[in-house]
Structure formats: structure tokens, C-alpha cells
Length: 556
Ligand SMILES: [Zn+2]
Image 1 (tube, rainbow, N blue to C red):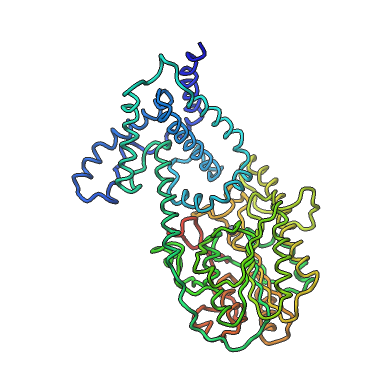
Image 2: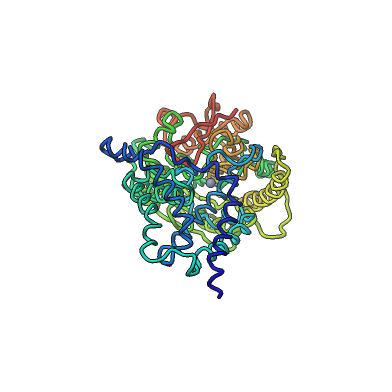
């Protein structure tokens, strides 16, 4: 008796899904698009056949998607229903997050490109953070799981596809998969439930290939020769997602730090911004340096310069949970003498545990170059400060989005962002200097990129591209601590006073090299101007998620 309801419930669930998805349907790719089989097909005949059969396969695959909940064979029904449904869910979620609210209706195109999926897969260890940030999708996820249970449930005898018809009903799906394999992912303009998994598989393969390529890259040895020794300890702190203006500059002043104000970061996305920073890549070579091999380079890393100058190299990583991130490969790690991975819980204690480690390293004998990848305030912000912590400093107001719901979302988000930065940066800095640093120490602090706070009318916080990227995504704090009274320190101090809000990350790498003892002229010749020079005439940051398709955003 119970059984006879199963198929009717499935039909109901499908109708419900189509109602929910109806606004997005016109954005689905057309079955009459010119098929892209060129990627791997050798003969034009194959292409001709492809153009002819593509609409047939497309329509067939749409029919298969609708029929799949009625397959009697669980081994086909359950996996296909799950893949199709989650592709739909993923598609709607990504479109909703990325959509500009002032645009009318839903986006014209539903196809989430492989670049976006690659970025998602590269940052898969941040999936839980993303779920926390966009928690408004939880009810939708739960609803989808319920629908999935209905669709995956065994259909009733009467309304079901039985025996060999199971294979017939799935045939278009098999053909789609074969076409995708043949074109190596080039053919994916099928209905979202099946087109998206193909692009996703393509992205997973691309990331694996990228990792493999990067693994085979070895940095060239350092050719510059260090001359004078300026510091005993050099500390580079790279924060995460901290936007200029949200840190308490009055506190910096009180602590006697040189504050360069709003500084343009190398990029608006962690992986390539951090990668460029540690290798001193130059604007003139970017973004084209990433086109042939993605995030891979033979340029010597900052670690090699530090080692060649006689420094012990120490890496404190509070960011990556001990896994490779941001283009770090085995070669890069081989230049590091001591590595410390901090993964304490709760999250908001991580930076402070990293600080304890930093303090221990600083108090050790000998020269050391210490690079701290701070956890910082990557979304979700609410896990980056203890509940109930009082706010001591608040950043500037940001531009309001046009839509009322988004304004409310922004108010809540900016409130949490302020708390996160206050705890993770202002409090961290106070604690760092509370015991004082050794006399011959240089410390440079900055962040990998800034943050977008709904001013662009989307909920995306960084790694955006095109017209929605706001300057705040590429504006970060930059300050320097040093106590010596030398021409080096005086010039840095003067430039901080005279040229506030004028520098970029591209001036930091050369500054580090000069601080490590490399001759200024030789450094400038190879790596451009430093913080010892007047600021650059123009400054900009690279934006995007896919390193093969980055663009510049110039900032005043
Ligand atoms: Zn980042």
C-alpha cells in the first residue's frame, strides 16, 4: 500500500523542484549551441556528427534526468539522483551568492564556469567556513536532502522503469559522459544537473594537474650577494582578509610603528596574492607569468634569500591546517629550517597560540627570518572572536547596497567583521608588543588582501572579478616596526609619514631583501622600488579566482 505513493511523491517532488527552479530555466544552456568538440577531435567529420547529434543528446539527457528517480535499479537511481540534485542545489547557491541584487531577475546564464569551480575546489578545506558564512542556505540544503530522500526512494511497481529499460533511460547520460571524456571536459553545455558535474570533474582534474605541475617546479638559487647585516630577527606577518581602515591606527601610533596606511595588495585572492608576495614577482610580468603553468614559478623565494643571508628560516602557519596552500610546494618547504603548524581550537585562539610560538622563536639566539601566516579573519567572521567580546575599535562605514535585505545583511556582516578584526588584529598587535621586541628586530605586518563588504551588492567577500570588484578587496594595512636609529630606519619612517596610503605590496619584497642585507641598488634593479623609495606612480592589484585569467584593478 505504502509503495503506491512512492512514485506519486516523486512526481510531486519534481514539480516542486521545477517551480523553485523556474526562474533559472531560461538561463540553462541551449541544446542548439554549436558544440565544442574541437578540443580533442582530430577530424572534421567527428565535429560534423557532433553538431548533428548534440541537440538529440542534450534533449535525451534532460529526459534522463527527469526519469532517473523512477529507475528500478537502485545502483543507477541513487547515485544519479544524488548527483543531479546536488548540482542543482550548488548551482542555485552559487548564483545567489554571486548575483548582484540590483540586477533584475536571475542571471542570463546559469553556467558556472570551470574557473569558479576550480577556485571552489582549490579552497575545499574552507568548505565548512563557507557553509557557516552563507548559513542562510541551511534551510534550502535541508529541503534538498528531503527531496533527495524522496527521489532516491524505490519507485512503486506501476510507475517505474524496469529491466533493460533502466539502461535505455540512462543511455543519453552515458553518451554525455562519453562526449565529455572524448572532448576532455570541453563539452559541458548540457542541462545543469549533468553539465555542472562535468565541469566540476574538469576542475578537480585541473587542480590535481596544477598541483603536479607546481610540484615539479624548483626555484632558481639566489644570485644576489648579501653585504651588510642590519637585523638579528626579521619577522614578516601576513594576515588574512584584513581590509585597510579596520585596524586601529591610533594603536599603531601609540606603539611607535611606522604606518603606511591603505596599501594595495598583490591580489584580491589568497592563493596568488601570497604566491606573488613570497617571490617578489613584478607587475610588468603579471598576470602573464601564470598563463603557461598556473601558480608555479622558478623565481627564488624569500626563504632562499633569508638563508643565503645567514638567517635561520622559520615558518609559523596558523592558516593551512598543515596542508599545502596558496601554491606552496615541497620545493618551497625545503628552504624552511623550522615549521610550526598551529591548529588550535576554538579558532579564535589560533593567532594567539601562533604568537606564543613567535615569542619563543624571537627569544632564541642567532639570526632568524620568521614568516607568520596568520589565520586572521577569513569568513566566517563569527568564529574569529570569542562570543561576548567587547568592541574597542570600529572601522569606517562602507557604501550601502541598493537592496533593503542586503543592507540588513551588510549591517550584521560588518558588525561581525569589526569584532573579528578587533580581536584578531588590534588585540593581537597589543599583545605582540606588550613584552617588547628585541632591539635589533624588524617586523613588517600586512594582509594578503582586503575584503568586500556587500558594497558591490553581492555577498562575495573577495576573489571577485570584473565590474563587481571593489577597491576594498585590494586595500590592506601595512606597518613596520623597528627601533634602530639608522639611515635605513629614518628613510622608512619619513616615507611612512610623507607617503601615507601610497604604497603597494610590490614595494615590500625589495624592502625585505634590503633588510636581509642585500645591496639596495642590486635589489632595485631586479625587484623594483622599495619602501625606501618614493611611492610608485601607479598601483594596482590583480583580481579574479582563476590564475590563468587575472586582470588588473588600478587604485588611486
Ligand atoms: Zn586570503
